[in-house]
Length: 445
Image 1: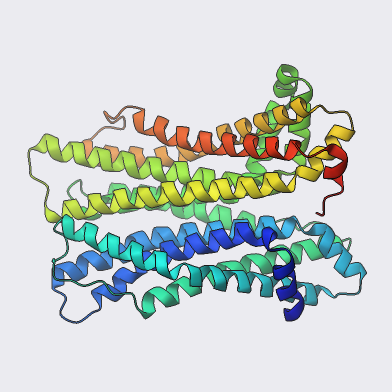
Image 2: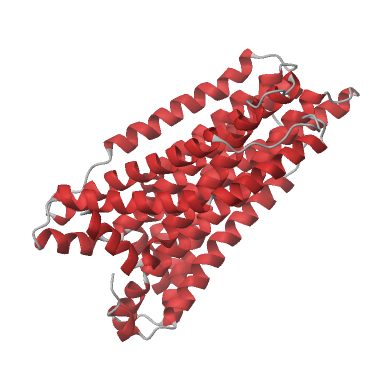
């Protein structure tokens, strides 16, 4: 099975590009921040510099690890789901479920290792630039030298391999069971994970009220609470999408005609696959809005008090903006990556719809409407998660549930997410529709 897995990767490398990009970027994020641990552990580092570097590696590295795990797992799950026909053919050819699992897991490991190795150079460069940022803001002594050592390397391999192997194993088990004629799993584990994220998120949000407004750790509880609530919505996104479609099916069909009918039908059938798009969208908007608004409230409150910001205040502010920068870049790339992979795979489906009577304009309209529905759904639940964190923080920090900040931050973040979702989906679909319908339906799945 290992030989078959390696041959599969060599013969069809395009199928693994999305997964390779996820593991590559994920390893870059994880190793960049964990290299701060290596730098802090070098001999001769002063206490203040060591504290700053350790906080950066622990806090921001924690965010990064969480996002990387989600991105790699969701991309791999989409990849395996798209290979249903291939897995069914292997089963009919005599392969056992255990053999198929080993083949897919070996493929995932090979891609994860290649992606992590390729990430070494960018991670070293990113870690060095991050250290320069801390030096420029006087949070780390100028004499501290950058170190890229065993902690960064071990964490990069560990996170990408665990996420890849775990996601591949769970996805192929489900696909193999369906290929053998079994019922689709009910997803009880996913429901439990989503419920746990909600419970922990609510706990994190309410922990804000146990702290004083001057407490340095005031922002930690609501930020982590908002992240966990966004993760809960992301995990349960298939069920959420079905509920939204159930409520909006008739209005959508009435307003948009054939394209609306095609959209509702396809989205209901592909709710699980489309959750791979909702996950990065919800996480991107929810975490970015929560972090940016809390930092804006904190900064404005500090200015209003007339007290000059301390070095620790600058440290927290720098960390928050670095976190948001990572989220914006990484989540947007993962969103585009997932959309491109999912839409490209549907070229054959588009050809079948056209042969059944749908015009290219109707198919393109279906994709555009599908993207709008996904965007609106993702924005709504991401905003709920962000507000759940921002309101308690504002109540404790400035004694009001409605802070002075306007909707500018929200509009910018939502605009980035909406443009990335709609432009990628419609652009990829338009490219796929340029393939003649008869030729498209003969493409290998």
